[in-house]
Image (tube, rainbow, N blue to C red; front, side):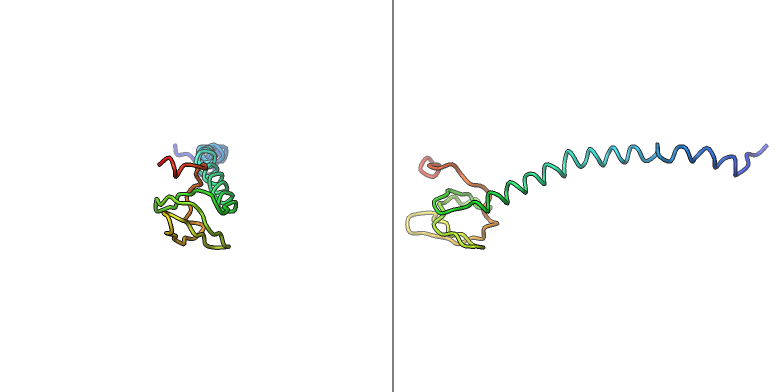
Length: 105
């Protein structure tokens, strides 16, 4: 009348892998749609910051547009107007602009 415990346990062993399959698929999709693009973008940002040089036109993370006048190991001096310079950390540079962008603004 009742199913024995040993008989009931044998049916569950074959479904263990199938129960984890959706979790594995979700993790793979998560990796390729979120983690991998963020790693690529972070690598591009590191390369851009490493390649900064005097004369480049940049935008800081605060939205200030200017031209680099001095570059040191950790800091960059940005000329935002005639005879007006600010010093920011290299990591505060958000993007590099094409040459001549400041004149067109």
